[in-house]
Image 1 (tube, rainbow, N blue to C red):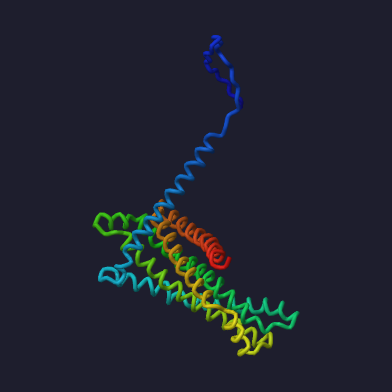
Image 2: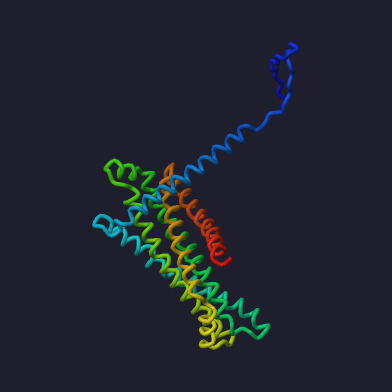
Length: 284
């Protein structure tokens, strides 16, 4: 649609009534884009300050008021995730060993599958798989719990009673994730390497001693430290995203479902991006 308007123009020559014709520009779309961008930056800032306050309360994790909650979250994150992590890690190691071994068999070098599996698992796949599993199971559960408390106004009730929600709800969950993620990553590494050894011995005719010799020979201590650093950072990210999305839940059960979905999607994307960035930082 063409819109015509008149602009009064008073120049030196006294000419007036300059007619200007222009096409409507989608100002509403630009406004909506800018508003959405500002809202996203606001949410990032809110999540960051929530994280800082929760980290400040880490010193209270084992205090009388928070010890029970912290222990419960450690149990939920660690013990209750062992079964699914065992299955995923075992088959991840078996798949890596099988795919790598099939290619190496062309050159008669399948004995080196131990080094390929160990390096890839310890450096990247261990923390990556543990992070995805915890984000999908524990992170979504945390978002649903906090979101339910938010929409039912339990969080507001805590604030009215003078109880800090970040200390009572966020801090125990972050502590549990930061502590248990490196431990679960070590467990994932061990199970995946054992799965690779099983495939190498039963299907690729690789002796167990040769498998572990190559695994230890080409794996550096730095790989383990980088993997554990990734795991701790992934735990911090999962906890922050889950709690922030839970606090942002609105609209009853539908809002809790949306917060849970956003938690899983955001955690997955952040784990992928941060995993790449950390690897590039330490190895390039």
